[in-house]
Length: 376
Image 1 (spheres, helix red, strand yellow):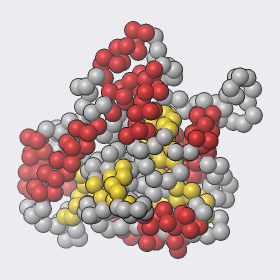
Image 2 (tube, helix red, strand yellow; image 1 turned 180 degrees about the horizontal axis):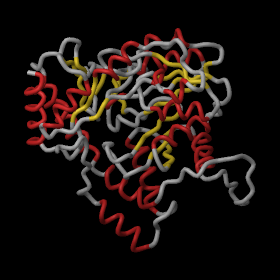
Image 3 (cartoon, helix red, strand yellow; image 1 turned 180 degrees about the vertical axis):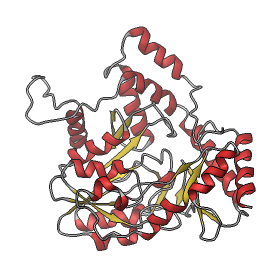
C-alpha cells in the first residue's frame, strides 16, 4: 500500500536526538528549543518563535494571548480542521464561518466583510492544503475594522504569497502575516517533530505573553506564585531536535513538494470528472496534500473512489468535514440554519492522494495510473 504520508528523517535528526539522550536534556529545556524557535521564526520572516507541543494548542495559545474571550467573534473558514474552532470555543468566543473559494479551497475572502459585526475581534485565515489565502484584502479589512489576525499556517510551511501592501510587490512566506501565526509539526507536515507546533510573531510583548502562558504562567523570580491560569503547552528538547534538523533542509523539502504537485497536475489533467486545487498567480503552493474533487456524474463518490484505489494499493484520506456539520459544535448551538455549499461539496466529493515528502516518483506514477484506471 502506498501511504498517504511518509516523512523524511534522513538528515541530522538521529544525531541531534542522540545528543539529547546522551546529555540528558530530554524535557522542555535544552539548546534545541531555542535554536528551533529562532531558525523557524527567521525562516518565516518573524522576530520571535514560541514552540509548543502541537499545532492545536498553538492556536489555543494564540487566542488566549490575544485576550479573546466570551462573546467575542472570530471569523474563520467553514472548511478546515476542528482545531481552529476548538481554540475559539475553548476561550468562550464564537466562531463565525465563511465558505470556501471553489478554486483554491481556502476561505472566500470576499465573504468576510459581510460577517463582521460590532463583536468581531479577529479573523483566522487558514492556508488550506498548502495554498495561501489571499491575504492582502483580508489584512486591509483587519486594518479597517481594528481586528487581530490569527494566521493558521499549519499546512503551508514554505508557501508564499505575492503581497502588494509594500512599496512594491513582494513574495512573503506564509507565517509572516497577522499578529500571530501558528504552525503544526505533525508527522505529515513539511517540517515535522513528530508532534509539535509553534506560534510566531513580531510583537515582543505578545511573545513574552505567549511564553508566560505556555509555561503554567510561572512568574519569573517567584515561580510558584500564579496571578493567572496558564497552560502546560511546552515542547520537549527531543522534539525540537528533530524539528531543527528538518528546518536545515526546508528548501529541498519545498522543492520536492512542488515537484510532486506539478507531477500530479500534469498526470491527472486529462482524467474526466475531477478537478484539482488551482494555484493562483499570486501564490506559490507547497501542495501539502494533493487533492481532487469529483464532479457530479463521475460515477463515483469520494468513498467509492477511495475503496477502488485501496484495492489497487493506494491509500487516500477524505477531506475535512465543514465546521457547520460537526455535531460537537452544533450541540453548542452554533451554526443553526447555516449552509456552506462549497465546503459541503469539498467534504462530500473530495479526497487526497499520497503526498508525503518521502513519496518516490515511481510510487507517484503508480498512484496516477490507478486514478486513471478507476476514472478513465
